Length: 107
Image (cartoon, rainbow, N blue to C red; front, side, top):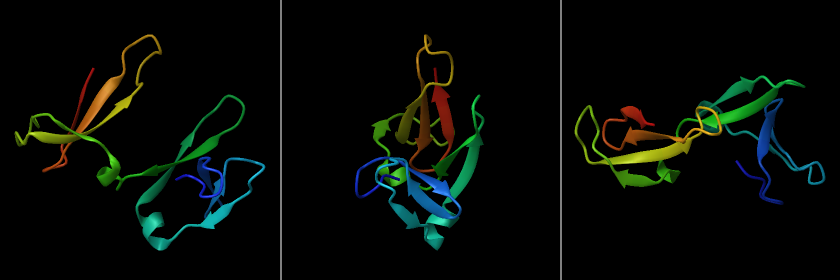
């Protein structure tokens, strides 16, 4: 989620979303619907741990492409690209079927 005032990323903190821009200091309470669709993942950093908000139900904002699902053979899927390996390796394309929600990837 992005801050409506300055456009910076917002991070979870004590049941609220806090703007990552220290000068802005915008906070927003999390609604019950947002809390039900979100989970908090902790990423370990060398200096300090950081929390990242991961939303599971954001498929309607992902781009679609023509790709055949290996499970149901439907011809349309949502897709994202992630850097899952070293920086000098190509990105991984992750697909999710628009019909059956089966997820697969291509390297």
